[in-house]
Image (cartoon, rainbow, N blue to C red; front, side):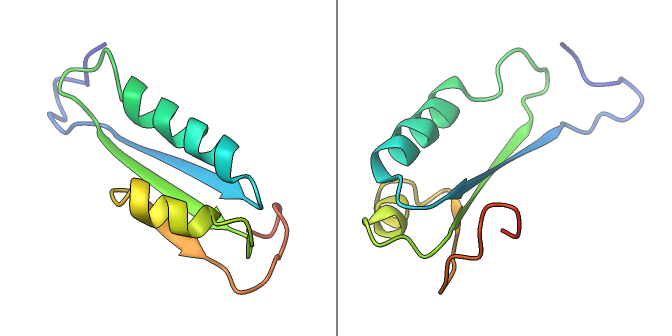
Length: 85
């Protein structure tokens, strides 16, 4: 797939993941996103991953910060729910 030749600007893909106490599932999810990457685009699009953590107490925010420093982590102080996040 190619980007419109008029723009010459690569695409920007943003993935937003909302999480609450899903450390192992979140790790698998983020690994899948980064391993797959934006395939099939020329030029390669920019990939931004944002993780919104709803005050998990299972180590999820710490795991994201340690294992996926390229992701933007928004660690909330309270669980505001998936819809509000």
